[in-house]
Image (cartoon, rainbow, N blue to C red):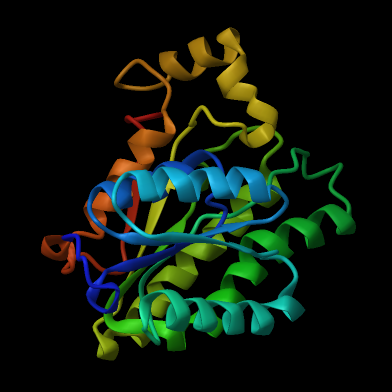
Length: 259
């Protein structure tokens, strides 16, 4: 990836849930590589604007757009907004990279799970990803890329994460199907599966608890817990032109946890 002073030839990434955590770190990592960013947020316009300012401070262009991934009925209007932003800011009808990062967490065991818990997580973590991608694929340039964010927890058991892990496994299966179906347009589709990462996800459990940090570090080959920048670096590297032959893959970014 290389920067461009011409908006019409710039690389553009749309990152869901980019106002914080891994999404924010990815926006900044891509900006360092000269990629412009559409930052989506749910409830924090000020945080999203802060990311936009940080991206612009790195010499790239950015705009914040509100998105509720789990509100399927709103996706048509969101796609229209993206089209308008592309036209107004870049003189373009398409963008290059979709990073499906936005999500939520609701701990709970199999025995305690309610239908409401199930539906709310599935709507955001799988159904929302499925139908949002469906709406946005026509706006992705031929030769572009989709990166779906999953979790290392699809590979091993973690207590109280049954619904979350199951939805992420579904996203991994979706990745392989989309890689096949979009191959004729030279669009790659891959999964990045982070391990335990210190953000405000799950109420900042890992970020704020020394005990949890010590436990995760003891289970990880590199003897530490992950940072958002560890994951964003992998995403940025995957989107480099020289890695475009990587397709339909699940790439775990966990420091070697539970090997």
